[in-house]
Image (tube, helix red, strand yellow):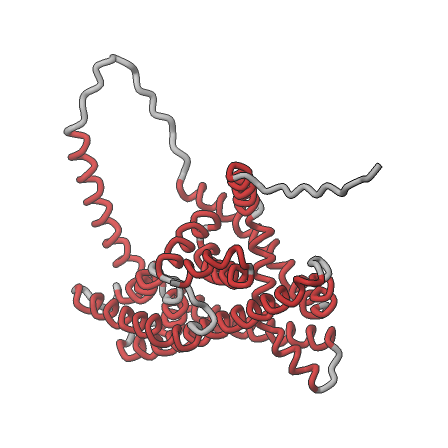
Length: 352
């Protein structure tokens, strides 16, 4: 009696794919702290890997080179943090000088909002049911902010404490991790997987380095511009404006806020504020249309619609960190799609 091998190929239905996608998105939302920590560690490891490879050229063992690279990176961040902290401390010392003008502006805005709400209440229908309205005491906004802030700070500190260890292990055991990753795929697929990972490495490194250089250049130019205007805390305001400018769409407006707050104590007319916004907008346009395409565009090919949708989605999932990580995540998805035959139409849509 002859026997035949029966091979059953099961394909997921559209409903099953939607359910699977929903489960993945729920995992990304509820496990945001873990996922964001891993992504930040991966990006940092990609950024420091060329330095570790440079140490290897001088026959420094890779674990030692990874430790040295991590120490140098930590030292640079510490120096930047100390330098910025001095400026922050100076800003806090001079805060009373900025507080009164800012308070007058916020009071004027609040008065207009209350006047508008009062006019809206005048056109609302009166309550004819005879019900007794009980107004519950509202929680103090300051207390609510502090309570939420403590939870957020605890999460950030907890996540940041894991990043150095993750980065070190990723750098020190790169070859073992690479080999183990290759073993996850069939032998006939490993060449394509290797090419995809290499393209992904080039893209991530180019994106991080390019954006860092653009942010530093914008920060220095903003600093010199604020010095020319005679604004206090020019260095701190310049660095904040430079890095805010890297956030697509919202970054342009956010970059106006630091110098505007300082300028409240110096100017009483709207002209200087408009001038500051115009100059920073000009810098942003140059960065977006000239610098970033030259430094980052060769590695990241995403159309404006894909970038907008990515920022909207990842910002909704992860808030501020989603705005920072949305573009590299989407660019990584495009690299994967370009190397998977069935997903290439998606990659083409993201780039056209």
